Image (cartoon, rainbow, N blue to C red; front, side):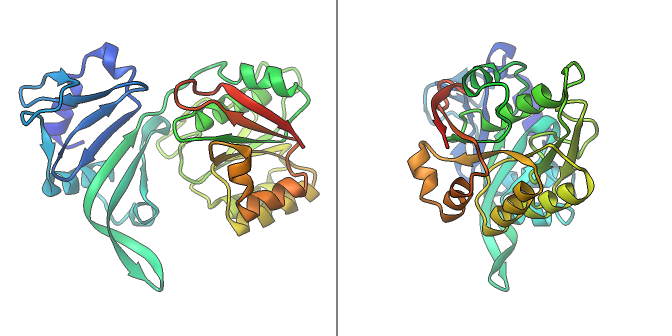
Length: 296
């Protein structure tokens, strides 16, 4: 972060810092610190408050440009493709969502200028958070779709599932491949990253469809793990992988099975029996907890 914001954020009390899920900066608006149940602001004298007032620290367009520049390790060109997709990978599985004015090229977003919003998503390790899911699906099930709304714990959950299936202390570990397109499951861009199991291979920043095809051809995985599936290319790669004997653990945004089933490519995968079960999560108030289990 820029030095002035680094100083502001470093003064957040530790008991609150451990609860923060998002740090949001918007052009002309106060900094917000979002926890599971509360929204906090920072006053001009550095105090944390839940009260909205005119004495709160606000972010302007110049600040946002500097924040994005700093989060990009002072090299916007290096992260141009990722910024065009709306994110910047950070350490330890965290990421920054970015929004601004799109620069188009050949009908696609080529880059982003005049940034107006940055959302830092804070990622944390929760060992054992998959116990509820595993107790419900059964230990023999290795292919399932996890459905959940934002902040319901999907990524945290699949990270723990990787440790469960491919950990060093597992009796019969399964070779696992993570296609980490946004570098938020294993976070390997900056070194070792998160613990995702001894017998896990990580394909960092590969598009999910391309990474799936490479993993099937070269890494002989038992399980491939993907976050936020949905495109036609991803569906084709997963169908091909299933026909090669690979199991898939994947996530999809949604509040119900009926909602995600309205997406043609997910319906295609469900009808083809790529997944044995569908797990619907409770939501942000009870992250990683199973709300509904559907057998296919």
